[in-house]
Amino acid sequence: MPLNLPNLITWLRIILIPLLIGIFYAPDEWLAPGGKNVAACAVFVVAALSDWLDGYLARALNQTSAFGAFLDPVADKLIVAAALIVLLQLERVEPVIALIIIGREIAISALREWMAKLGQSGSVAVAYVGKVKTVTQMVAIPLLLYHDTLFGMISTQWLGTVLINIAAVLTVISMVHYLRRALPYASG
Image (cartoon, rainbow, N blue to C red):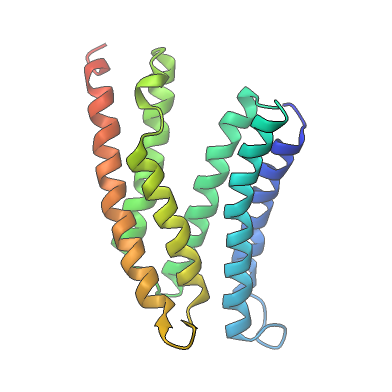
């Protein structure tokens, strides 16, 4: 396991998961409910930005590694799943939406592992629709965590719900895309 700056930043993202969850279990005397929303939103935004930063630094510093390529998407899936479970508990996201997104992440991870064993990992490389899905999720989740109004007039719950529903649709589309790419190798 190469210990370099990009990988340390990825580990930081994983370490932020218990903090994100723990914020909502803190006593109200320590942090009022509105403060919990702001803190959780901030933690998630830091995690999302660190995802971009670790990739940028890995390329800029020529510190890419097989371990980093493995760990980075795992960290992404873990923080998204943790946030969705918290939002589910807070009743800010519908169970079917959380199930679609988390289920797809598990299914596609398994598909990628299988395709790698077949020597066909390029067949299920990240597609444009997957990138759009990720961006939509990464905007929707902080809005749902924040759970207040922006500029005194935009309901983040409403906007976050619209975006997470779009992300769920894109999730299904991207999953179908990856499954279609893998289908020719299913008989092998």
